[in-house]
Image 1: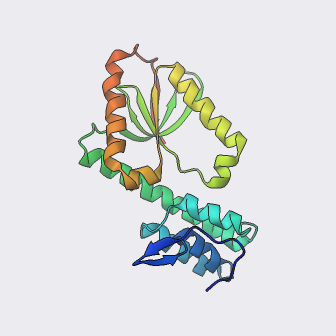
Image 2: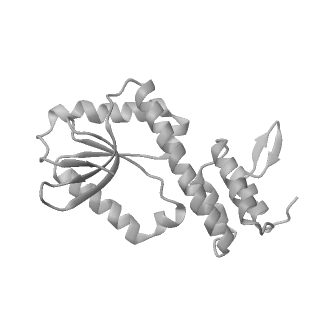
Image 3: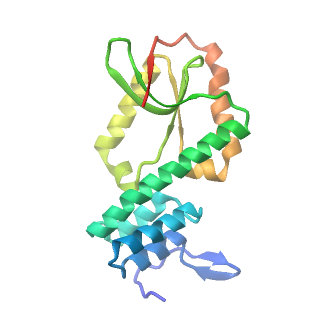
Length: 203
């Protein structure tokens, strides 16, 4: 039992109100000093599908734990783990829902021109790009990071490329709906003006 002045919104487990997993992790991490233990604890929670990395980072930030070096190191590992899981879900969603196979993890650029940015999946014949939004809570609040994402998206869309953004949480909770979003974007390609010629390179 952890005494607190800021009670979390409880979740019911077999009728018993308990703290959400992300909050329970933050409470536990506050008492830990071993970097390896913190990393294993956070990674196990995400790998087991109990919570998303962004929720954990948000709670650690609220608890003012992100100033501790061993917690920051664990969070970096956690974000990488979360991204790998999200990519696996994306691969599975594409294959299980019969979407055409895209080019995975590629860089886009104009011929002889500037780099347009990397995307997680690209369907060149449809000019549809897909990005997984795996930014942490801190990155979402960082105006520089947000402006860079917005600039890339606007540039690609001006060139005739449709950019689809998916979050790891939506891929986990409703993959069928996310597959429908991608399928709609692919089907709409025939109604648009042809996209500019874009060079696709492995990332």
